[in-house]
Image 1 (tube, rainbow, N blue to C red):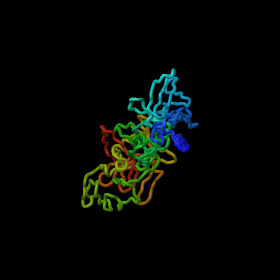
Image 2 (image 1 turned 180 degrees about the vertical axis):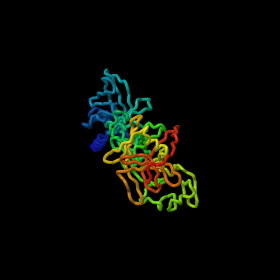
Image 3 (image 1 turned 30 degrees about the vertical axis):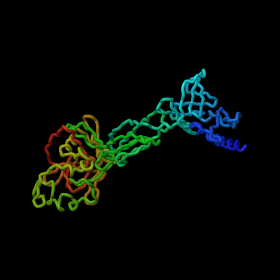
Image 4 (image 1 turned 135 degrees about the vertical axis):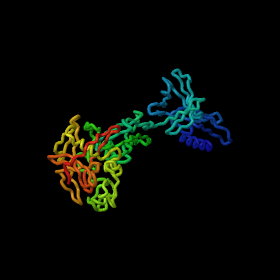
Length: 442
């Protein structure tokens, strides 16, 4: 009776460890001999070696060890039912023999057709292989998650003008990925920013990278290189010059932008000879861009008549090939054979609209006035725009306009004036125009 109780306790322990059946188990008698046993679908029967069968149970049916649907992929499944049927093949049944760790699959006639070796069986995982195969099938109780494997963007390179916007779109692969959400980021939002709908906004000249990344933990991402340029307009001029749509330092056509002394590339608070970069405080002490010795410091001359790139406010702030317009480009813009000028208002700002006679394109020049010392003069009534060209001696050429007149003139180079960038396309040359008397001088 005592031995029987011990055996019963052992069997109850084995009944609670059904996952061990795939590895097989043995029960030993006290003399070390193996107790014979057989498995049924609802119990385990042991032969006590004397001639009496002892049945312990009822236990969980043997088939329940693997019963249920197992996922090989998201859509590829194998089902072992408790009643011994399976969808492993058409109209098939199966027998699970836990001691051997084997599944025998029978056809509709009950004939064994395939043997699957069970390598591992837990509550969540069933690892199988066919006999003689080194390939494993890993089945799980839970449907696998399909991660994102790739992201394709509508563009991998994008060029925008400042303040322009464009929306990038994306495609996720595979199409049945469980989580198709993405996150958009910019490597430099000061150049171009992006919202979570993929809309890119150009903020400043330069380059940056827009990244579209999966949020499912896969680490998959795609990138688009964004180049931001300043916008220009083709007025159909003979020289091929393209004019910028806004002033240096402005983000829209009607904004005044920054003010620069001629040959300086940064704005400042006070515009005077005492703060001018290229003199010693007076007009007869020039240290650069001087063609007459009576204006040069210690009789200095360098005969430079065009701003060098490092002293050009358009080039320094926007980069090459942007330049301040030359005297000849300025006169071409004012030539009534090529353009018409109209005093007008844009978004409440006074200025001139310059329209091409050849293609109808136009630019707007705000009447931004000029700065002298620490004050702004004539804003809203007059416009003053520097050229890159030096007049004989100490002054520089500039564009001038007000409500009833426009043209070119020469101004004192320490004054703060507007700068409108221009492009001269490669391979073209502008015809030199004679420099007649100026129409305006402050």
